[in-house]
Image (spheres, rainbow, N blue to C red):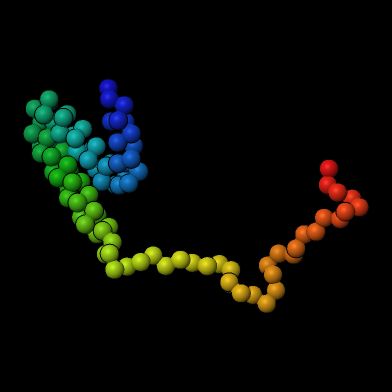
Amino acid sequence: MNAALPRFLKSAYRKEPLSSFLLTIGVVDAVIGGFDDRWALFGFGLGTVGVAIALRWWLFQQRRPEPSQQPVAKHYLPYNSSRPALPMLSVSKKNPPQ
């Protein structure tokens, strides 16, 4: 088995867990229905695969950010404060650290 296939599958499941789950369920149903000559299960599996692909496409279309939007940086501390946030540390010359 190709080493890239498991990495691709893991990344696909992390990005879109719901559509990947539906896709897996649909493929398994379609395979079981196809081999067992149960056409209702085969059709349900193909329908589930179609819904999963449509869901993934719809989520992909919504995720595209517009180029005019720039991410806004959040600053948790003010740039100029009246007092320093942390006290200055000074090392005593009489007792140096060991």
